[in-house]
Amino acid sequence: MRRQCVALLAMLLAGCEGRGALVSVTNQSGQPLEQIVVTGRGFADTIPRLAPGQAGRVLVHPRGESGVALTFSAPGGHIAIPQQGYLEDCCGYNVRLTVNQALKVDFDYSLERR
Image (cartoon, rainbow, N blue to C red; front, side, top):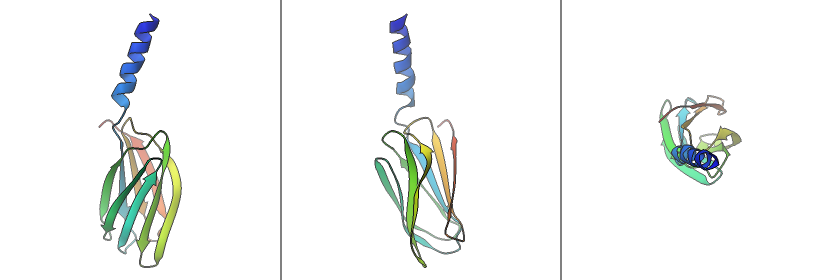
């Protein structure tokens, strides 16, 4: 019985590993954003430029549990948003970051099967 439980647990964990988390960044600031970098534990991915109203996506693979930080350049200067939220490299995390007109970031996430 114990051997079967261990095998079942291994199969469940194997099915969940390595899917990554999809992070989307939407620019609702009304101005162009450049050098957009999405970072977390074990990853750093870049979106070169987003025009007003445009969105970009990156598939990230965090090492263990992580939050998401965002840095970008806008006409007013360089903005750094500290790490927030929660994601893992499994289970279909979808993270939505929206840069608003005040150059603040609204964070939302969900779990979806992918």
